[in-house]
Image 1 (cartoon, one colour):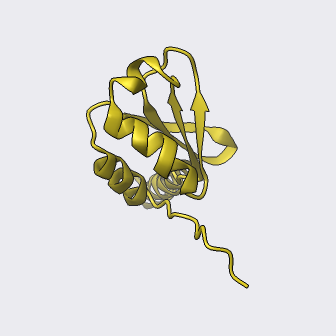
Image 2: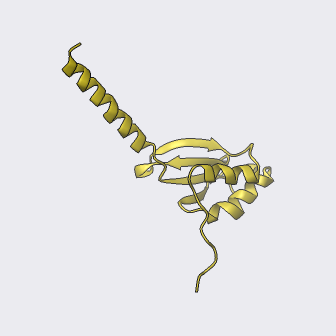
Image 3: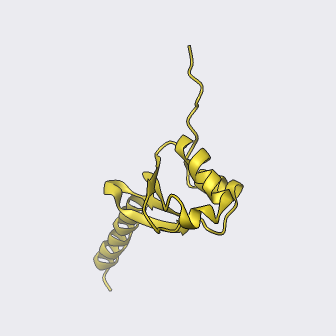
Length: 112
């Protein structure tokens, strides 16, 4: 393999790696879950969804009939990057998970 071909191959790999990295940047997230049904059987997750999740920046909650609770990480253009089931997590674990993905809680106190 010539030096020029090696250079092109390495350049292509670097560009592909950078593009892949940019495509996987988490821009926002959504929690999809039913409002009752399975959520009522998961009191810890329900408290997270109803009480904690609305306070995180760039995180929305979408209620879909019959949907199990999942955290959906989104990239540019709302491209789905990852789905994470929340059913087996505690309220604290749900909060820790969202924080570990780079989301922060809004300051609920109004400043004067």
